[in-house]
Structures are given as C-alpha cells and as structure tokens.
Length: 479
View (cartoon, rainbow, N blue to C red):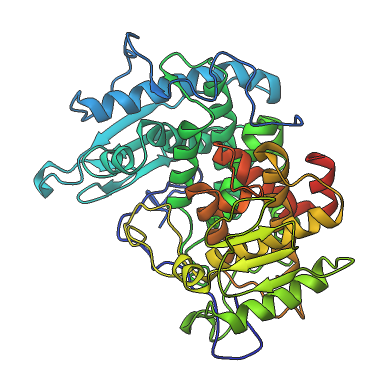
C-alpha cells in the first residue's frame, strides 16, 4: 500500500537465487532463463475434490527416454508428465488449429550439481549449474535439471508442480507451431499463453483423463497454484522480469483451466493490457523504501476509504481494541472480526501488523509466501465487506456463498484502491500478497464465522472476479 505521504510504500520479495522458468519458443540464442461454468472449479469427471493427487499407482511408466537421463525418480516423473501432455495435445490440436501437430523432437535431462566436465549442451548452451526447465525453439526440444530444480519443486510443493512446469514448457512448443505467437510477440504474452495452455492440461488431469496422474481440486490444485506463485516475477521494475506477477500468472492458468485452449488463444497484448487496467505493475519512485505501517492511523484511513468505495446506509463501527468476545451472531475471527449484531469491525491491531510482517519461509527461492502490508489490509477489507453484505440483506454464513462473495468483494475493493486519488492506494506487489494469503489460509474468503472453502482455486477465482469485473459481478455469481 502507499499513501500520499512519501515515507510509505508496499514492498515485494527480493529475487530468489533459484531460477525456474523457460526458454522462448522463438529464440535462436540458446535457453533464456525465466528469473465457464457457474462453478468452474468443480469437476464433473472421475477425480473428486478430496481424491488422490499425484502419480497414479500401478501404472506402467512411459517408454519415452531423455538424452543424458539417469533413469531415476525425477526423470521418470518428468517423462511421464511429457507423455501425458503430448497425448493431450494430440487430441486437442485438431479441435483448434490447422495442419499436423509436431510433438517435441528431443528431450534432454541434466544434473546442475554435476561437475563441469559432466555438463552437456542444451539449446547451444552449457548446462553446468543451470537450474532450470526450458523449451528450445532451435531444435524443438525440452530439457530440465533433475539435480536441483525438480527435487526442489517436489519438496516445496509436490509431484504435480513438476507436471505443471513441464506442461508450461510444452505450451511453448505448441504456441509457435500454432501461430499463437511469433518472434515479435512480447515475452509476457508468450509466457501467459504457456501458463494458460498448462491450465487447460490441468483440467484434463483433474477430470481423470491423464494416464499417469490425478489431481484433486483442493490440496492438489492448491499446490500447483502455489508453484505458479513461486515462479512469479518478483521485481516489477526489473526490465528482464517479463513473465507476469503471481496474480497475472494464476489468472492465465485459471483461464486455461476454466475456458480451455480457446481461452488461451485469446490472450494477446491487448487482452493483458485490458486485464491490467489501473492495477499497478511497477513501483513508483520511492515506493521500495518502506511499507504502510499497520497501525490504528492507517486502519482508520482505510476505513474512511472503504466508506467511499462501498458506501453503506449506516457505516459500521470500528473497534481497534480487539476482535470482541461477546457477539451472539458469530464467533470472533482473528486477527479481525465482524459482529453483525452490533455492526462492528473489531481489530487486533498487533495481530494484524504481524500478519502484514515477515513470515518464515518467505525468502526461500521457491516460496508461495508473499509477505507485505496488504496481507493485513485485505483481511481488514474482507470484514468490512461483510458489513456491506449485511447492508444489502445478504446471508453472512456459508463458505460457498458468503465466503466466496467476501473474497470477490475484497477483490473489487482492491481494484478501487488502485485508482488515482485513493488514499491509501495499491502498490506493485499488493495483489500478489493478497493471492498468497488466499492460498495460504483463505481468511479473506471466509464467512462471518471464519469458514473457508478448501479449494484455493475457488478462493482465487472469486477474488479475481471482483478485481477484474467489479462489485456487481460478486452478487451475480454468488447470489
């Protein structure tokens, strides 16, 4: 967040040391590291929200082999993923594109921990200490590091994170021959198209149609989205960071998951610019030097701004002495609570400040934790939106209805906070902080009792709907 005072801003994480990303499908210069329905997350196929997620048991491994592979667990996981992605594209290609589909021509594996004399060449470059997975347009190949990158993905998230990364890389192999992109297409567009195409494949897996993998729509899909957050652009002012914020990358994945390949074809520069709207994508001068303090003064300013963004027939009371213990209508939620009986938003300011401060694990190279002041402020916003729903005569209980509507309205407020004249005002990185919190504990998507749907995808979809389509969309979708 930022205010009109020059001492304040919103921060983002420092760039991690571990590179995860891809090569362009159109580069000739070697690998470039990358520093529907009403309820579209619900699956009608064979995989349930609480079913298994990951490699299927008792299924033969693919016959595919990787050059320089070691036949170990990481290579087997990656090769099975590529086999299923390729099968998906063999079926999908004729539905959307002309001509024949050309599968990836070459697969290569390397170990970034190996000594230099054991390094091999990928896309014209030495793979010594090259921690990455990539697609090379020069020879229509895909390669990965089995020594550091893939094990880190599995350890930080789960096996499906590797599947997601390789589905993304295969997306680059598809977009060039499909003429979705070309050499002149901005990298941002190429990357979000590839994220989207990976999302379309994930839907295929979630519906039970993948030979080697299953994906449930709660912890399984949550982990995949967490991996997407982890490989976001972390410094929006770095001209080499052109792959998208966590919010943008998750949006692209969700477009593919809900709308399929057709939704990915629609992603271009104009679509991304329209989607960004007034949302901040770079820091303004001086914004990287401090954060908006989470204190009574800032919360009072936020409360006043909320009253302007979503005015009520009678403003709720704001209590900064705690979350309250005597509300008959709902138990208190920490660190901020709404009591419908007294129409009061109660805040434990110290706990809110802690929510907006540093968190364990946030500095890890592959982390879905994005810390910052907006983690606290969006929680405060969410309880105000419960007062809005009470004022509109809507139910405040039920995670599927009131909870997701709360996330959606919080997204609508978030966009309003990005506009000229808002004080406090959204800064670069704030959206990613909200996304991280929605995946981590989902408090912003909770009802008045603190109940939350287990699907992070559903929580993020609701928030994204509010960000992109505004307040009225929340009442329509979550009636």
